[in-house]
Length: 411
Image (tube, rainbow, N blue to C red; front, side, top):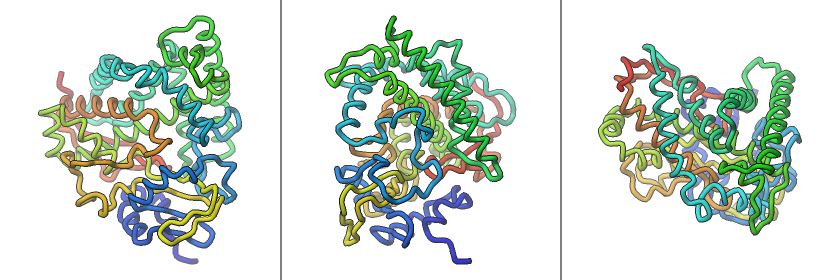
């Protein structure tokens, strides 16, 4: 049996707890390519340049090479919904993203996210109040329910339906994380059923909001008229599903990776407990140091391109390793050190270019509020298991569980 390739080692679950030494090996060459595998780029400057290069496509139809990771495309693979704008190139990408942005943020809705601050704080406080017992799983009790509740409020899902929404999210998220020995056919069947039920539910909400719009985001997507036009029903549903899965999954990982990092750096945890203003730069450093999205594997050149003397052919599978770029010593001094006082922290943790994270302002605010609250209120938190068990997904990296022992919760 031949030795595993570097890329096989990077995606192997046994290395999920610490892939960073493998990323350092990856950066030894500007472009890593095995004979039959994808082209992989791990240096900061090259990754950032390619994220801004209009010759790099996000549309699956432009790729002739096969996908190397199960579910690496993300989103809805069943054909139930059309591709969301993450999977589209201009001009369709620009049209859908612009329409979605009008009710979400500047310049048209500049107070949408900041206006949610009080509601987010109330949710965070309520979840922290409920952290009773000597030992908790932070993912189950806090990191997971917080962002999915926020997405429900943002979209305008009625409070009485939030538990149903949570259930669908549970199933769809689980489908992104295949487990050893799992019945794949049954997993896919259950996930498809959840997609159908979620789609029917959202379609009913969209119809209601078209007739009687409110101030929520779903109402504005369904009934708003933008210069770019109005979304079709299917486009609204695809966008809502994107907000649910992409907006939720990354934030779960960001909060959980953040608390794990703080517990490994107790001096920083104490600083945050004493001064919540540290939360903003701390979250930026977390996005560099332990980004929730490790790689962007679903890219392809639409023409032959050259990167540092290597030609990446049209239609090839191209992986952009943002987590590797974030630890590149050619861009960041002492990159393997967690430093919330780091200056000029232009990380790739939220992407860059036209596909930069759409929900970045909301994810930042959620993580800042969550980590500041946990630091302030948990009495003597400590890790029960280090490293914790990680999710199987190589793209969306974060602990599946984070068991923490505590002496109590401060009021």
